[in-house]
Length: 448
Ligand code: DMJ
Image (cartoon, rainbow, N blue to C red; front, side, top):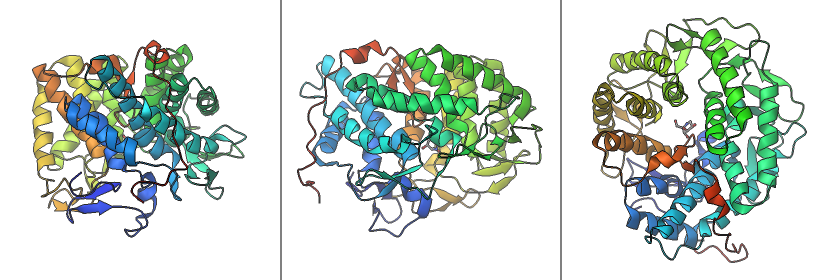
């Protein structure tokens, strides 16, 4: 807030903000940024989880006062949904809860109006013959980028919690209808091995990649299936998850490691490259009840962590040798550590948490935390993704808070989306939600 607000990200070496249009383009990496104070919105509910209610309220009020979603920028539907829409909805529900507790009395439901405004801008992406959303939209013109018609499994399959919740809260069915169709289409792609390919043409429906596995491009689809069942109790999601989970275990894993295979002829190749993103998997295994499998696969990631100076590299071989030595301050290994501790209460995971904490402290700068371009030499880069506050620090905090039983907030009533935003398990709470206040787009932006 001191160095970068209202920009989307903090540059932790320069100690200034990063914003699209002003900073030089980093290509795809910038597609989560829409000049909507991304890091503030993504990090807001972390403040509430940690019990910093005054800071949380201050942040909510700043968003309500200053943030707009109609900038003339092309953004990623996936990134903006999980980070911004998810962040707004989560903070809205938390604000209602705090209002109920007499802590946030003047909250009038404004974040839901923001979520609706953003949701309407993203909704245009789903207008395809397949129901699979275009990966990119222009927020101002509400148009899709037609020359980018290929989406990935995670990109299309991780939007359900946010859009379905938006429908529940606003009592407008179009958001739910759109994501529901998307989920049906995606599941229909499963091959005779019950494996789902990872890239599709949103107009023709053609499969663009048969690569299948738990890592990049696919990861959060499986997470969303399970969590959508947990939040909305739609039994079909649980059945689908069970079937796909069994296939992933049987067809893509060897000795506790999960590989990428061809969905039409699956043979795991231990020589293949694995990714940091896949580290979320043991946590999901534990959450879904396969504790034995979770402990084994966690151990394999822990071996990689030990071999690489107490970091999980961005890419690595199955023997743990780094193939891409960046550490982008990602949360996945910590997320799994949290779930494994919660499920086992084994202090081993707390000890790992302490090692992770030390590694993260090595990324510290005078105004933030920096990604590493090399985990051996600890070479810092001027980059701090918004998920560092939304996820990495939240899971790290929760790990130790759960251990000490000192949580100010009952997180067990919630399921975390893939960006660690909170979604209430019992959706009946939403029926009584405050209706959205009006959101006037004709007013010029206060920060313009
Ligand atoms: C986050 O934005 C989410 O966890 C997403 O599902 C994957 N990538 C980043 C963190 O690594």
